[in-house]
View 1 (spheres, rainbow, N blue to C red):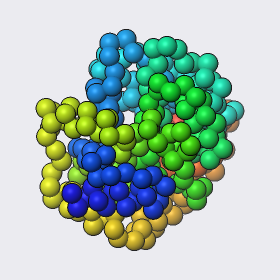
View 2: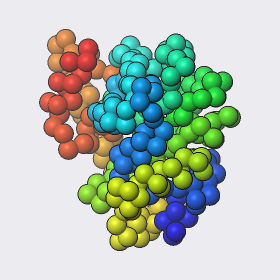
View 3: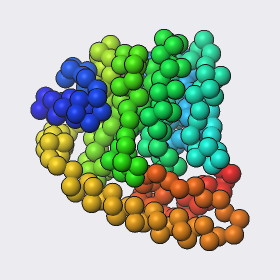
View 4: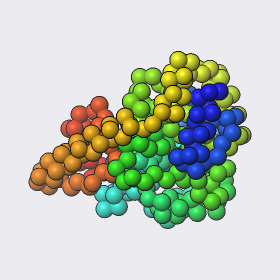
Length: 271
């Protein structure tokens, strides 16, 4: 309960999201939060729109839950950000979910307020689609601005905001994530999780509550280190003949454990 109270405070202060503690589900990592939602929501053949480039597990989690992934892509010319009209065109009567991350893993792109507002208008007008907003890289963001799609008009009851402690607080091995969403979804996710892992380790929950209530000085110092690495890596990549490089607005290409060649190889394959 102490951690769920701290999460509610964090959502309210930093994301303009109002939740009761009963609407918060703490899991063994943000990945489990996403899996809980998909298992609770998707029936066989339901469609989930996934904005690409995407984190590798989104598609597999959707398929594991019986859903059908519908991948909607954006290229380097759009800074790897899918437009609202593309999402609108991909919606069918079978669409149940929209999944995306901002700040984005793996591209480092950050959706602006206006871009998220346009997407929110498409989703809220439909009325039958739940958004999973993966915001785990919220603190490793070089733009200075983070917007949560769940805070836009009409999105409160159709958004599950997912976050965790692995990235911004460097607690990767502690396996702790959480989601805040409509009460019916939180209840369903609790039922799913209760039959799989029961709950996250109590000692990591205590540590996470302390982390959320502390100042963000260490996280911001880490962000500045990642920013310096970005500038170095991007400047070097731009010197490679024939390689197109965008300017990532957050961390991914320079702070993850994956080596640089993995990122360059992925970009080349995607292009």
